[in-house]
Length: 379
Ligand code: PLP
Image (cartoon, rainbow, N blue to C red; front, side):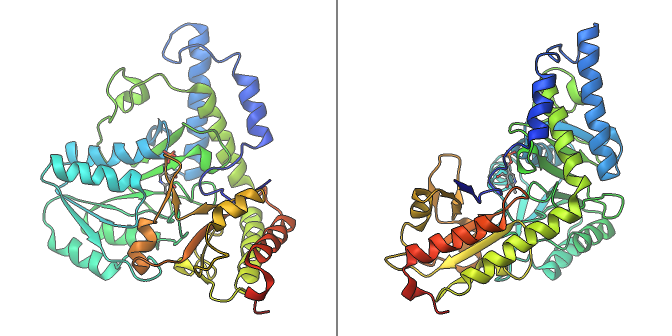
C-alpha cells in the first residue's frame, strides 16, 4: 500500500505512538482535580501548551486546546460575531467547509454580512478587492483566509494580508490546518489574530487541535460547560493526545527545512512524471509552487482515466479525488469549481509526507502509466 493522502490525514510517527503508550495508563486523572493524579495531568497539559507556544513565539495563555481544526474555526467565527461584534466577514468561496458552513449559518442567524473575495485561476484571493473592502467598512471586520488550500495547496501571501488587516484594524483569522508543522510559522514575525490547527495533519492523533488567539482579541467559548481552558473551551481536556500533539509539532519544527526539501523533491518528481501524460495539467499551478505537500492533477476525461481514483485504490495507492468529505463520498470539488467552473476533468490530489519515498513516487507514476495504457504518454 502506498499512502499519498497526507492532506487528508497523516500516519502517527513511532515516537508519537510511544508517547501515547507511555502516558495513556498513567494520565487518567482529571486535569482539573486538585489531587496528585489531577495535578500530574495538569502539568502534562501545561507543558504541552508551553512547547507549542514556544514554537510559535506566542504566550502559552494564547493557545486554546480544541478537538481539532473544525472546532477551532467555529470558535473564532462564532466568537467574532458574538463577542467582537463583527458585522462583516471577508473570505473566499474556496475555504474549507469548516469555515464556509459556519459562515452560512452565521449569515442566517445574525445580520453579519459575508463578503466573498474573487479568486484568480490559481486560487489567489484578490487583495486589491480586500484592501478596498477594508477601506470602506466602518464597523468591525473579520478577515478569514486559509494559509494553504487543502485541495490545491495554493498559499496565501500571509504577510500582505496580515499587514492589510492590521493597518485597517480588521481582525485576521487564518485556517492554518494544512501548514502547521510544514511551514515555519512564527507569529512574532507575521502577526495573525487567530489561527486554527489540527494535530492529525502533522503526524499527531485525530480529534485534537488548537486555536491560537492573540491575547488582544477577546473571545468567548464556543462550547459551554465547565471552565476549562481558562474559561475558553469547556470539556475535560484530552491530556494524552494534547501531549502527543505538542511532541508531533516539536518534531516537525526540529526538521522543518530538511522535510521541506525532501517532500518538495517528491512532489517535483511526481509532477515531472505526470506532465508527460497528454492533456494533464496541474490545478492551481500546484506543480510550480504552493504548499510542498500537495500536487493536484487534472487528467483529461477518457475511458482510462474514468474511475482513476478507484483504479489506484485497487492497485494499493491511496489518493484523494475532488475532495473527500466526511461521508466518504467524492463529489465535484467546490474549490476547483470556483477556479475553473464545472469541467469533466478527473482531478486527483496527491499529498506527500516525510514518510513517503522516491521509490513510491516512481511506482505510482508507473501504475498510472499502466492504467492509462502507454499510448497516452507522449514521451
Ligand atoms: N481546515 C482545513 C484546511 C482542513 O484541511 C481540515 C481537515 O481536512 C480542517 C479544517 C478540519 O480539521 P479537523 O479534521 O481537525 O476538524
